Image (cartoon, rainbow, N blue to C red; front, side):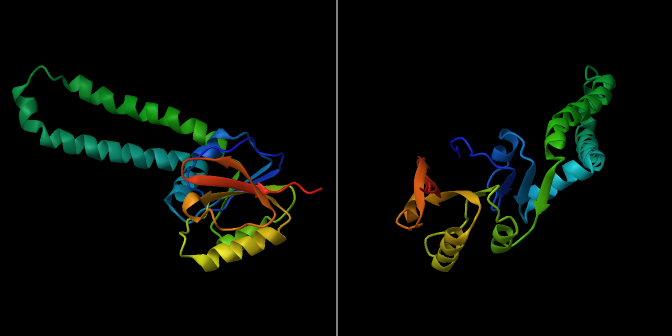
Length: 196
């Protein structure tokens, strides 16, 4: 999902990260928070804190797959003398080296990111500061009225800046003090209305 230019901020917070792309595409903020309980945050933590271990695990998986493939192809290899052993020995290191190069940029980008695993209310409260910008893409449906109502109340009382993705099927949901800043096929983006 595309957002218009982000306002000035020193703390960037994604409470329900739906995609890592926004985090990787935006310019660095002084503080960046990625709040997630899932596998993406785990992968990011591993990539940031133990890149060599992650690379070794992937390399091991590559090697296991390579050996499994080698066993499966054994009969064909015996019949096909044109398939050189040299090719098989060199293929794995090249793939691992390419993987290492592909992991380097995300590793550098994630070095300063704070990973949280907070309930959304706690994350909003912890980073409720005028210098913070929260990107909010709640995973809820129309039927989760209590959650939407709780979010409305918290945003109305918040001191932070925010951008809220509101699915079109619940576009009738009212967020007092907000205005539409962008529209997409399935989403309307809201932001606090300018005061004054």
